[in-house]
Image (cartoon, rainbow, N blue to C red):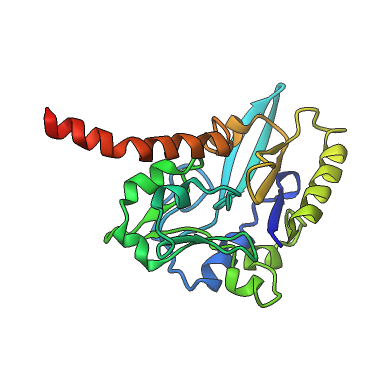
Amino acid sequence: MSYSFFIDTERCTACRACQVACKQWHDLPAEKTQNWGTFQNPPDLSFMTYKLVRMKEEVIDGKLRWLFLPEQCRHCIEPPCLETADDPQAIYKDEKTGAVIFTANTKNLDANEIIESCPYNIPRKAADGTLAKCDMCNDRVTNGLLPACVQTCPTGAMNFGEREDMLSLADQRLAQVRKKYSKAQLVDSDDVNVIYLITAAPSDYHRNLMAAAGVHGFTRQMALKKMMRPFGRAIRQLA
């Protein structure tokens, strides 16, 4: 069995209940920040912030619109980070839920290489190199509970369940939303377990909302890069 999120941005009001719930459940501290010209705070994901509601004002078809994106790890079906790490003690995929889990052993990996491998630029590192990100609230899910962010969402923007059910719900909502927003689409739904419904171009929300070459293509690129590493070292030694 595999689980997925369906995040309906058309229903998101940027209340940030999901962001706060994630902090509370994972016992993560608040981050010191300041007014930097937007209600989006903190400015970015971090080792202490797994979920962030991104906010942008965009003029689309002559109208000013707020675009909200509750961003988190996508829990890729074929995770490039897992392929790059090649260390199940550090990064593994829970086959029962589909959650991609980072452990404290990520401090033994090349953190920059893992971050670079993610087509969505999600993992963040602590001072000692340990990596962290959304864990799908795997402890809650395996005990029959919803992820904290989904449990607390007041508008129905956050949804969670068996993958086929979420794909069906996403298709139904897409058909409804397209009556108002003709450019509405689902983002990378074949490749990830966090499926976004958006109503404008992906780049209008955030530069890393959509994987440029697709997750599977990115995974192949990273696998090829990994395979070529020994040859690169040999060439440097001969030079």
